[in-house]
Length: 464
Image (cartoon, rainbow, N blue to C red; front, side, top):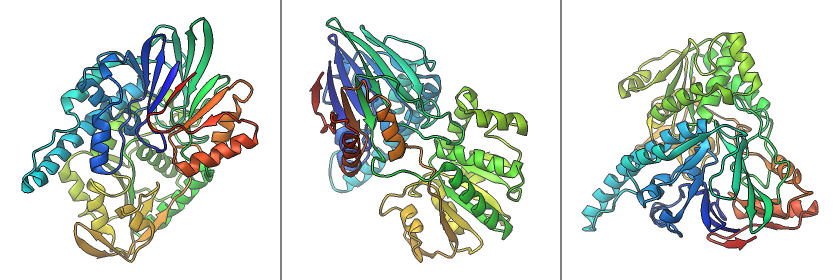
């Protein structure tokens, strides 16, 4: 078997690992690389292998850095099956379609600039038609059920606890008369996250490809994050203000909705209107509602007790139209607005921040990591003035930052995950992590006498 690491190597984006087994090619994930525009376009456009010769894809979950380059794979004549859990099929179909719309829109914008410079136009990385073809290639599989993506490989999905439908993947392989197991972690979730079941640890593996995103630190308890968020909501609503939450459309938005549902049901915070204002989040929430089989026992019990769905309650409104979105800024009563994007760089959330940042009654609640130079980071840093749409605004509202809501395993769980196969594993490959995080995790594993840990370079190939 040969493994080639064509993405999420020395970075946390663009997951893409090609396995060559028994003369066939099996691709684990086909994620979009996200970085500087010019570099991203070239890296995503050009595969280091022939997509026509890939015999199957197994998708760990729907996040764009794992699924987002599937339409480009199809555009280059891949036409075989893409295996995923049922929830991932529905969610990824939605997300690659949304990504395709963005690709087309971005190409129009870039070409306008190129035309001004007398340069030839570029094509979008892929189109909505390409995304539609991806949806037609999906093959949904239940957690735990065996399937054979290529000859000599029997695969199974196991709950990863990262987002709805996310999975770790075991591959029982027979090649040249030898049998062995490869385990691909995908993105590992966390214990006690809202909505989702806890991640299943691998019980046996000869080889493992494992994420290392937070290999250098552990997280605070999700239950503590819930308490912090509850206190922010209570304080803001009681003083007549609005809580504005920039949140990623898939995963984080649904977790926050469940939190608010629980708070209001238990009368822990004043009852107030809650609005989810993001077209993708609205559509993604429908997928979440369609897959209650993925919920954890705590969420199931809450649904029974509250007698209404986890992601729908009487104070909640899913906003679809631009007109409805604009109307929220005319309303003065206390409310909660959850809107994408998570780093407040584009989308409807920017308008909500612009309209509410100068009111001291309001709170902007930051619930995820914010990249440098983004509006979200400037708010998280509590800058006195922020520039929005080329205008300067005085930040008079409160800003609250809630740690502990990350969907990725921290260092403690990554160690536990790896140590669970210590007695069997011959080699661990660390991916989906920056150098500092991966090196820290490597050192800690070696201190536990797990010496065969490797941090592969981009496009590096390894024979096993």
